[in-house]
Length: 243
Ligand code: SF4
Ligand code: SF4
Image 1 (tube, rainbow, N blue to C red):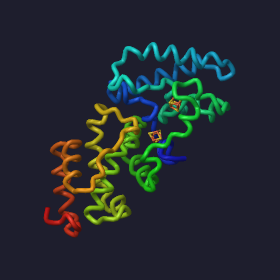
Image 2: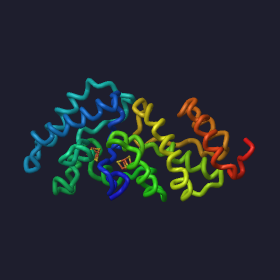
Image 3: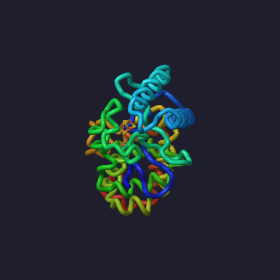
Image 4: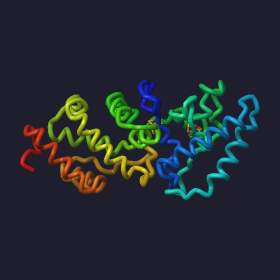
């Protein structure tokens, strides 16, 4: 298993299939995923090839009325719930279900893109540590997808703790509750963003000030509050002490 479908917990990610491009609330995302799943289960027959494009066309028509955050980003209707309890989301036409290695060719992207794509957080050397943290934080797969796709925020945190000369092992263990607090605040505004995981990080965060600017923009007043509390725990915070 992987960041897309963690071994632990009952959550998974579907951000790169374009879900968050739709202007919906977290509750509405879940309703949409549920509707897609029910319709898929009642209309698609894996033995009847034309039932795949009929489902796709039907869902694209139904979802065309939902406002998008970016008209150029596609949101694939084959993303739905893939377990019996409707908790984990994923590709309903993945070969693991259809038995056909090319079944994702019925989608806009096609099997080769769908199967080859790995996002930054999934590729990260720290993927297992991020995965375990996100599983612990996320209440459901919509929240987990927000967290898993948000690779710029994760990268900024890695850089932040490096500035403080705190190892990644210490960050994930000693400062776990602080990270969880920060991410729970991040989740409050996550639905406004269009996390696809394709976002390009133009900022290398090579200066501490760039991190200050980034976190203040992303977290508002909570950033300073969080940082001050953290400073109390790390008087040995390395090269940025005294800031
Ligand atoms: S955004 Fe990353 S973790 Fe999420 S499904 Fe895509 S590749 Fe997997
Ligand atoms: S067909 Fe591709 S884009 Fe669509 S849900 Fe499956 S993996 Fe995602």
